[in-house]
Length: 157
Image (cartoon, rainbow, N blue to C red; front, side):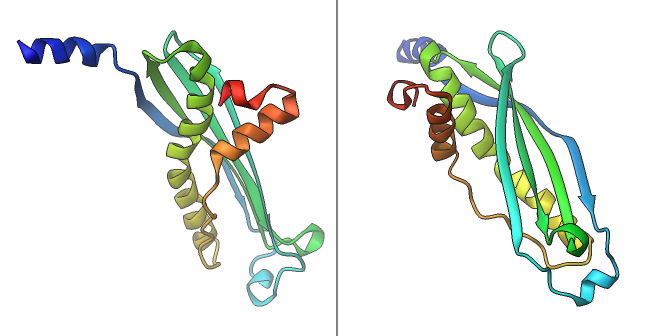
């Protein structure tokens, strides 16, 4: 009898699950190879991170993690990359006011290690030491995005 009660409680428990994850778009450029193998980039590494999300079904949300970066600039560019790595996440039994924060923080947090590995391998395959992107605080990134949009952070996080 206790199992039946737990089964009912589990059915109403909040759930966050990965339905799928995939590369939407990926580009790696190595425009000055092989010359660039013997030179230091004129400027350091750059990285831009963006997270976008959209609802694709009643309980399913696609989260798109965009990582763009490279080494060098202009004619001294060593390499550049752009990765759109996405996932579909199912969110069930979560209060509606918490769904956006959950999707936009936990979704990219779960996607990031896979995107990081793709970038590291592409840079290594381009002839350079692998580039391991430092961990990203997606909670802070979410709060910054809310603040930039003028939304109250405390109510949505």
